[in-house]
Length: 568
Image 1 (spheres, one colour):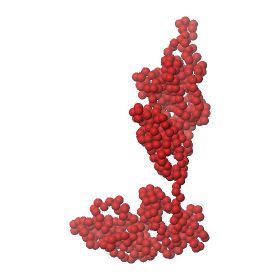
Image 2 (cartoon, helix red, strand yellow):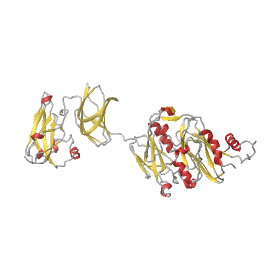
Image 3 (tube, rainbow, N blue to C red):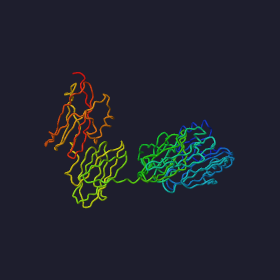
Image 4 (cartoon, rainbow, N blue to C red):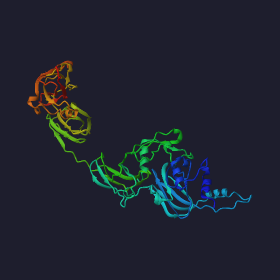
């Protein structure tokens, strides 16, 4: 019989402009071939024991070939569709017996065999159509040339193929446990906790693995390849190779596909050159997240939306081979957010409001009398807070508020106002809010745009410090307080004491320096200075200025730390 590798070469000569060796399961040669990926360039040969990636054009079949050199050889072929269903068929091509070619008039037996291989269809062994990861496995296969034909009828797509004659020893795909389901163990408004049984590949075979969790709102995924295709479609333009253009199934960098890299969540390659492809596909954004978490088999997904259905998939990937297996995914709907209790605001009365970190509060203002406008005063005690105001469902105002702000809203007979306050990500928020149809009765003092306290360094002495601050055109009462602090007084401590809603009534009497009234019709002259005396040499002091309005509500300026001179 003519050696099988010669038959294989004749079959592949039209596919390549140069001669190349066939992959073999001789281990030393196999390792050399796998390391040199260019070995399979322009080839329709499936190497024994290595996974290849390739591309299909819609309604254009593609054939791959695989050699089994001896009878009674185990054989396993696995096909992984990525982003479209595939129809594939595996068939066995019987090779002709050796012919006598000694006579000068006889035709060339090698040419006869080549023509016979190309013309005959062979015996079909297995066929499948769908988007599942499907495989053919046989414990005893005859020698011969195996042909794998693939077809995509929906769209251009890419896929992966793995074939081996040593499936027992290779085990490139991680094994699943006897119960491969992903369980939802805890469900909240914005969080879902998942758990699954560990893969025997890690616990029994001691091979390095990692789990990747995929979250999306559309459907479960059957392979990590499908996830990568979706992620690549989201962040990159995919360039398809031209029909008939020879390309390496290992090298998809030219076409914009993501490489298999289990060390990263997902990465995308640089944009391809337009010369390499016939079409560029731009797809809409997809809401999908992939998180690789190492070898933990419990994971909590956070920052989800309330009352929303999510699909969760878990994949176990072999860190050595970069090949993965899918658990049986699950889905769950997050809990609905508890309905917020709405706080009723009374006309002209200050209301204290506390908002949790990332939380929200709803307030309602329904004036009894007819009105032309509503004045809204907001005093954010700590960090900024987001405010939205709707009148009878119509949005009137939406912005972030820091410090004291005043808003004028156009009124409407019998109108009702819904106010939504949303906390920020840094921490909880405290506010004072007042809504009124009679703005002349103002509880909040007017403030300048700059509420900092200015310290004059050149006027510092061993026992005094001179400071200044701005006022407004309205006559208000200002009180200044001092408190000795450590030299290493930090910004964090200062921030904790920066609650602008705490009035002077929370301070000790011994900390009070003085109170005074002042204002100026000329805003450029609305500034006052004060010298704080009786301080100790080389000590640090925290200074606070409080301004009190006609309604008795106090606001604190930004705190200032000053240090007296040690030697004078």
